[in-house]
Image (cartoon, rainbow, N blue to C red; front, side, top):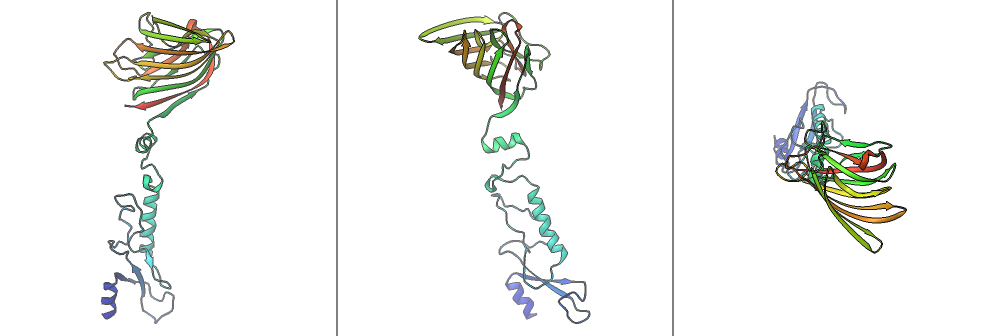
Length: 275
């Protein structure tokens, strides 16, 4: 009784092992005692049913995971500890422990404050359009890369409200303002058009960065801003373009095409921010 009282005072629990004659050897019919120390201040559990991490995402070994040397460990204790560790390993790792705190990419980006996510990378070769559907979740889009038309042509984007079944292509469905710097000369142009212009100039190559705002928002125009370096007659010029879809219906797909349905090749990346 004195030993038990001392053990309780020291937060030590004695667990009876029902299997007799385990080593170390002892008198026949006796029972092994497994000494399990509970972590100070922690509730005691043999089954590992406690959550492995606290509210701050910090992991601590479960109560009962410290053993006294040269004693036998009961299987339920060890299994409980292993189950606790397995639960932690199969749970999204919190940021404080070097993880993302999320079971999927979208939530991970949100938790880490990384807004942009890759929608797709494209390497067209000899095509007349590149179509991207399923964009209803994205408020902001960013398109970066380059295109090389098979013959000189302008570079355009058209949008869809029915996920690519059709694309707005009327003569006044879009407007754009274009500004091009060629050596010391600056020229500007403004027009309604059947597409938003990445560049309205005829080019043999276009390297561009385009962003589209309010893509999936109803009640407001989608607006695209582009900065590009264009190749015209062997000379590289700089082109700035602002364009808008003249309609307030939320959009959910887009396609790239060249003026005059010219075929093109290239490589570009589409990213998005949900909202």
